[in-house]
Image (cartoon, rainbow, N blue to C red):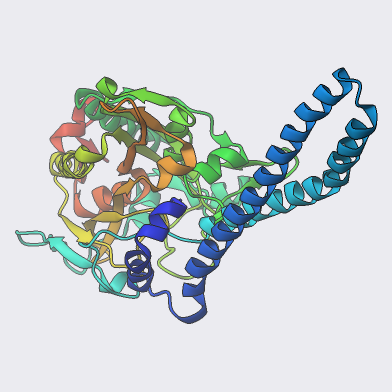
Length: 426
């Protein structure tokens, strides 16, 4: 979340950022509400400190009077201190409520968009940063979508997944399972080569972890919630992996911190039924390899470009047509300052599929996480956090099947031959 001092010192910038995100009218009032709460916090704290300081002074005087045998005077001052105890309790209770209201208010304010974020309302307003330079694959009218190819080659089964769990939980089998496993290992090996430490995290997180990375309160309706234990199934490895450094003060010399993790991801996708949900396009459980970096603020946008290059390299090795989009204000994630999406072209569906988001959160996550570092000035400062999908498997599988279908079978890109143990799925 944003720091209240940042909001106070950059009020117009924050309001402009909210407008870029299409906040208007009453939604903008949260900024003034937060500043008013902070003013109340300061004045209440001042009043409380004044009373406590006066009581401390009187308590010292009382002790001296007792020692001097001036009991009557001491008792009078003691009664004066006692009379203030009710006021102290009242102010302490008010402070707790003000701090809670202030925190809740700050949680409602999203990150300030980077100036590169274009205006816009929906994903249709996202800007193409880098378009595919070559010809898009044309498989002809007889091209089969991946759900038909999956059935043809017995790669996955939506019916069995629905029987076991429900709609949106595909079951991979045989060569389809080998393809999944091969892709996961390929992505992890590439991340290892790029210097990322591999993490195998828990798949459920507590409320503090979900709040620290911004899933709560913004996305609680999208997460599966184990209510009895108050734990959440992770929507992405970003959540547990980034929380490795929650409440940690980092040595500046240890930057950059680079972590990667493969996990299943669980998303309820509430409200998305009927929207591009065919096959693997939108499912409730899918595998993904995530890359996370925690870095010095001065380096974060260089690191963002480095992460873009990493994801781009994966797609080039998979020989998939791709493009890069800059997300507009209306499509930008709540916690992100700047996000780039990678999309691959699906030849049979004749449409682009999102397979990766790469984001810089600046200090928004680290303020919630309390991820700090000691600078050369010996003071602690908030680090910057970034993450990216490298890559999400469901749609990658869809594009690989559709773009590489031939009469002989699915011809896999060379980079996957050793990982999958075959060159053609047939």
